[in-house]
Amino acid sequence: MIKELRLKYSVPELCRYLKISESGYYTWLNRKPSKREQEEARLTVEVKAIHKRTRGVYGAEKLQKELAEGGTYVGICRIKRIKREQGLYCKQTKK
Image (cartoon, rainbow, N blue to C red; front, side, top):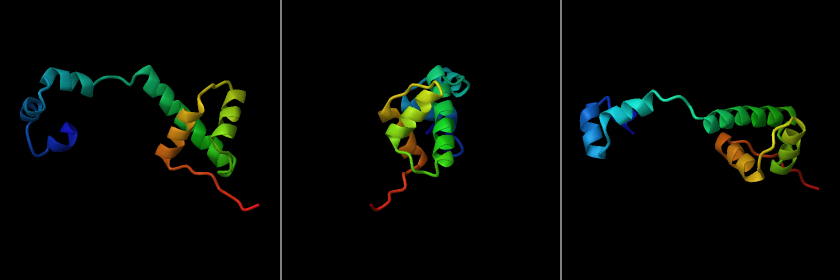
């Protein structure tokens, strides 16, 4: 929020309004991604690659099995969330 508004208002003013410290804001701004965020980014790339390789046919369950074969064990809900955030949907065919 501060990133977008800092062009209109000063950072100290925004920090005072949001009741956070300036040093805390700048520390957060320069912080490295956490281990979970790094893993999430890697997993997103893997899911996109499998989705593309399988021509968008695999759902979350098959993706989970495919990832497990590669040595990455992850829950179905997490895969569903990643697919939803990335806008990846399965092709559905009529039987």
